[in-house]
Length: 102
Image (cartoon, rainbow, N blue to C red; front, side, top):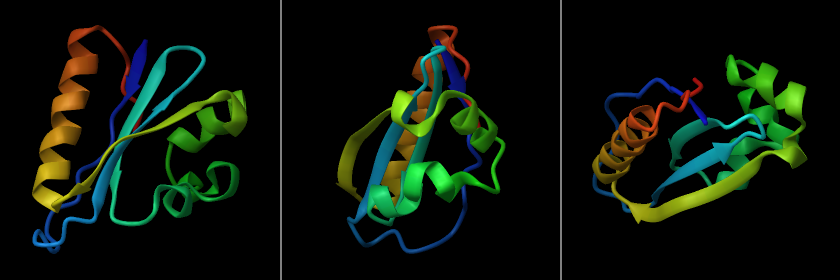
């Protein structure tokens, strides 16, 4: 499994517990780990259109949005909790020799 890396955005409100961490698992074992303050489906957009400006979008087009497993890993997190969990998951997948996409 390969894991897609994503850039971590600094700053913002850490007091609201409305962040979630999610995972996209691709058929070729690539993985994308992300966090959002939006509702996941709004963040992802229709058939992955929320990623059009990111390198991962090429893989979404290659495999098709419906062939990718979309998992909301954990929600109701503060921004800091979400960042920490995102980093932990990326480290976990890297240790398993997976490729993290970003």
